[in-house]
Length: 158
Image (tube, rainbow, N blue to C red):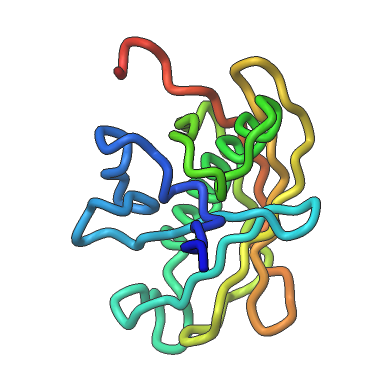
């Protein structure tokens, strides 16, 4: 039986681009956020840890912004990979994106100790840029809306 490959784009970032605190698989202290396709949407799921508390019972907004941020760059990488005719499961090195802009609207207090789901819709795909609209869900409610622009890593960062 063939080994099943990961559907998560972060598992295919080059090693020098896999250290992000939010989504870097090689950062031992990081959040290890992972993004995959879910139909036509992108999906990142995360369970907040106790240290992500703002007020007892509620998640710190910075974690929610980080989730939206890394979801945007992961979604951008997925969209660029798909535009090149690839899927993460093929095991090819994935494009790496950084955030060019991120607008985050906090709609409701977010309860602690419940799964967060960032769901993204690809709004625009260019040669280097991807626009992503994201909703973060907790307990069946949208708690955050974000729009981000992810761009392919510039040559100056390689």
